[in-house]
Image (cartoon, rainbow, N blue to C red; front, side, top):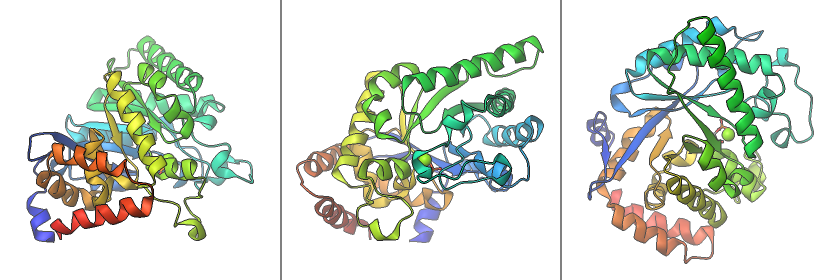
Length: 325
Ligand code: PEP
Ligand code: MG
């Protein structure tokens, strides 16, 4: 089977009835940039920049970040790379940042909240990303958005940085797209309004499942509740996809659930445009996409929404997947 998948490596993922899905990869530091095989994917759907911050004893400089992002943009050769701004806090720490010890780190000072508070760090990163955008198709993505004010404020910093670069005659992509992670219930419920002001959505199922089901993603005792086929999670994804498409923006998934082959039917059926995952799973998911039809996927989704429990959904999807084993 590995060989079978291997043969699909450089092919695009198109369903039997002709719907194309972008299969992208997640990446995170200079080493993973060097290892990227851009022939075998449609782009980088999530570049986690926090690894650059965690690997050092001090804040990474604009110059250092610029070199990494530039290499990434160049390597992608015109394919889109989505660079997510710093998502530190929660389970990810860098000592020099002296983040407060918190009782509920996942509900605390993390991600965009830190960027909008420590704005010099945010601007340093945005300038580096913007400068790199002169070398490829770079997009900016904000993590953990919970309301419109955050998105608007974050975007004003992008505009401020552009203005500064203009003044210094430093080139960047003036058409750069700015999107958000949809990974909080607040963003899901507000996705109609957020879609009017974001250029794209990427659903972060790792966090979204945790926040919707009130289940710590790291807690082994509650893993039985932490499921991507949880009906509330599926309703959330449906809502986000519908609102994105109504506003004419694309929607992807960049959490682990994107690479779960049992869920591929569901993501297709819900109209997800892009799946971004660990590179090692990409060919497998392509294989699945190439063997199912969009029509069939939509029927599967209809059926699943008539069910009452995640276990029932799981069992049904498992049976469907038996055809591919
Ligand atoms: C997610 O939450 O699904 C996600 C992709 O972000 P991270 O795993 O980095 O929190
Ligand atoms: Mg997340």
